[in-house]
Length: 97
Image (cartoon, rainbow, N blue to C red; front, side, top):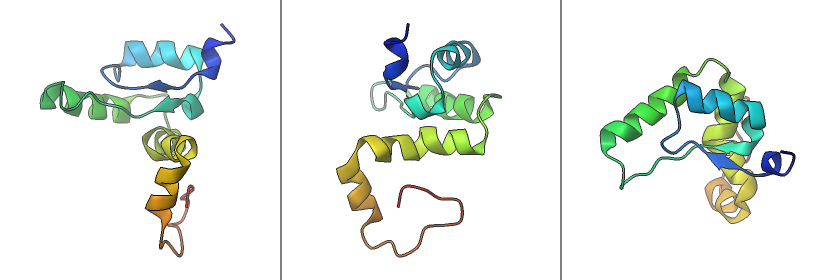
């Protein structure tokens, strides 16, 4: 079980309360990344995933920011460099840049 808690997991086709509760038993928000299966999943499924993640009662604003942005930037330093290039100041409460 410990080994499984070291992986990162995405929310593609899994942003529903049952799957997310199970995932939260295994890892915290710092090991979860936003994901959808666009263009392979229909747009309605992608929209439902976004809404399901936003409505999940165990994720506060800070957890959602990790899942939706900051975890990916931490794992992909070149993306972080490109996104933060030219940024002089970060918005209040922002991390990553």
